[in-house]
Image (cartoon, rainbow, N blue to C red; front, side, top):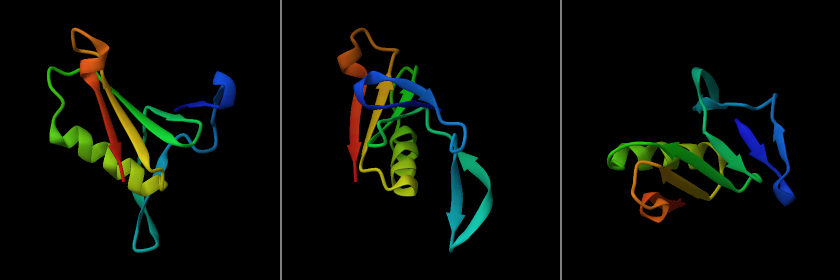
Length: 91
């Protein structure tokens, strides 16, 4: 996971490159890996698919709930214009 800090500086977050799955207070086997967490306030999920599906939105919603971050962004690069491939999701 690439973490962007204030001012656009980049750093690798070696200690928390994935999100643990916690169910009823216990850590389960497995982890979620968002593509990008920008400045700790936006989760960005990058796709290159013909069409965004409900499962893609559900994936970002899961990341938002697990991290308690309130804003997510799905970017689909398989569109004629990048604006057509943007989907904002919030809790």
